[in-house]
Image (cartoon, rainbow, N blue to C red; front, side, top):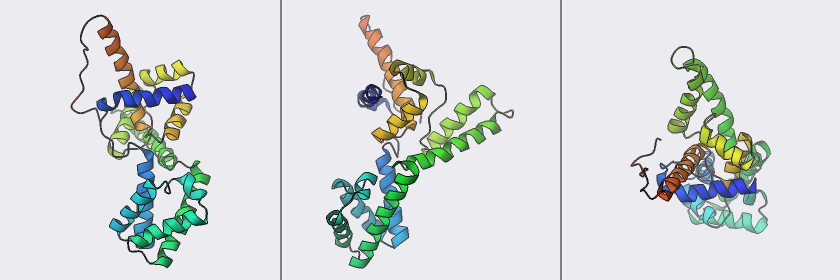
Amino acid sequence: MEKAEQALLRAYEENRDFLADLQWEWEEDRWLEFIICMFSEGHGIPSDAARKAVDVLAELGLASVRELRGADEGRVRLASQILERVGVAETDAGNAVASLIKLAQTVQDKWDGHIQRFLRSFGERMALELAAALADGAVEKAKASKVATLWLQNVANLPILLPDEPHIRAFSSEFGISRTELVEIADELDLNVASVDDILLARKLEGSRTKHRGKGGKSIFRKPAKARR
C-alpha cells in the first residue's frame, strides 16, 4: 500500500488549491480539540489556557497518541510544567496529564490510535439510516446513499467515504487496494477521509487537464471559487 499512500499524498499536495477548506482537514487537529475539551471541561482549566498548553504540547511533539502512550517520566513532567506555565496548579497539572495519558491509551486500545474511527463507526451507521429514509420515496435508491454520505460529510465533517465513486474505484484499481485499505491509508496519513473524495476527483481532473494541454490547448478546467463542500 506504500505506493498508494505516496500517490494519495502527492495528489493532495498537487491539488490542494482546488479543494475546499475543511475545519478538520487533518485528524490531528480533531484529536487536539479533544484534548482541549478534556482539559477545560474535565479538569476545569480555562479554555484559553488549555488551548495554549495544547498548542505547545503539539509543537514539542508531546500531544500525539503514540507519544503520550510511550511518555517517560521526563516527558510527563515536561507536559505538567507546560500546564503550570499557563496558570494550572502543580497538582492539577499532574492530574490532567495523567488523564491525558489514560485517554491516549484508551484511543489506542479501542480505535488503534485513531479517534476518527469512533466518529466513522457512527457516521457510517447514520449514513445507512438516512439513506434508507431517503430511499422511501424521496430519492432513487441508487442515489440515496451518496446523498446521505455527502450531506454528513458537508454539515458534520464526518470522516466517511462516498460509496462507489468512479474516481475512487479507479484509484483503488490502479494500486490494487480495497476501499477499506484506502481508508486505512488516509488514517495513517492523518488525513480526513472525507477529503479523499475531492482529492481523487481533483487527481482525475488533473489527468484530464494534462491530457488536454498535451494536445496543445489550454486547460478546460479552472480553479473553482468554492469547491462543492
